[in-house]
Amino acid sequence: MPARNSWIKATFLTAGGAALAGCAGPLSTLDPAGPSAGAIANLFYVMFAGSVILFVLTIGLLLATLLKPGFGKSLSPRRWIVWGGLAMPVVVLTALVIFALAMGERLIASPLASAPERVEARASQWVWTFSYPDREGAADTISVLHIPAGEPVDIVITAEDVIHSFWVPRLGGKLDAIPGHENVLRLLADQPGTYGGVCAEFCGVGHANMDFVVQAHEPEDYAATVSGAATEASQ
Amino acid sequence: MKSPATETVRRFPILWLVAGFGLWSLTFLTLYMVLTLGCAFSWHMTDHAFGLSLQRIVLVTLALLACIANIGMIRLYRRSELHERRDTIGVAADRLNIVALFCIIFTFGPVVALSPCH
Ligand SMILES: [Cu+2]
Image (cartoon, rainbow over all chains, first blue to last red; front, side):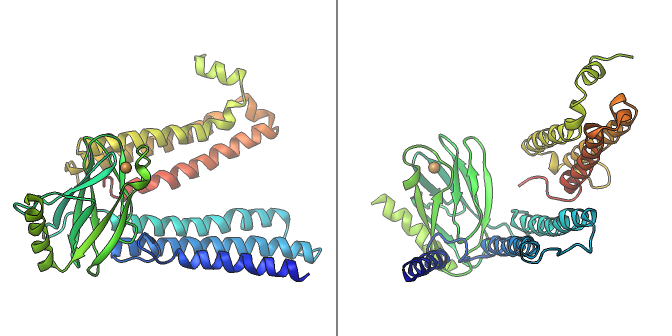
């Protein structure tokens, strides 16, 4: 049936294309540009591999029993349940949990020998405002966050009205912006560049458009840009 | 001794089926709540005995209490009439309470080592 074949082909091409297209772009978690996002992408690939292994094993065994009657008779049903239904998933899931916990520990902003640059991110309906307390005289920037590249930056995240969430997928995980509370997210951009960011917690009708960009500069350009923002704002 | 709790369990023996995982859920909620409070009050910054923070001591104690309560529950159940009967629900309740003990150890064991606050 050629008509059906071409449908199948079209479906696979579209799905494959969509899957590959999802790997690039300004908001792709699978195109990491720093160590935190890299750890998260690794976690995804390991989880994905684990699920593929379990899926292939389970479906393989199911197919074997369907296609080859009598398959697996040499093992008693009790053994199948204990080894296949208990031991195997416990081993695979335990390994995945340990890996996930280890990755989670690496993402925590623990104190460093030299304190990283601190930047404040304030969310409000429906805009992000960034300020630079470490840089004297630097004005706030709206919807644009400047950071130095190649060094850790602590983003102090808070909100003015409702709960929002700060997320720069190519640099790290998301962290809630909560009124009256400060959450600290440590980001590091390996290279200078522009990275997309969004609000990742539904916060009202303007939520979908509450995006921002992160501009990572060479450290010396960073200082100039942030003080330049001051002059721009004063004009 | 006839506490209201034992009386309720006598009238609804099926409660034994959910006892272990009920305890698991209660422990989950309690640990989550105490963890959040401890972080808000900076319990993790304190240094009590052996370099342990108040946060760590409280969380580990609660997880241990949950283990002890679960073991007590299993032993109590094994002395009950329902367990004597050895019907499907009776056996299932016994096994489920044991599985719940493993889940309590697996889920809450990491409070021993993981960073308590972000
Ligand atoms: Cu928002």
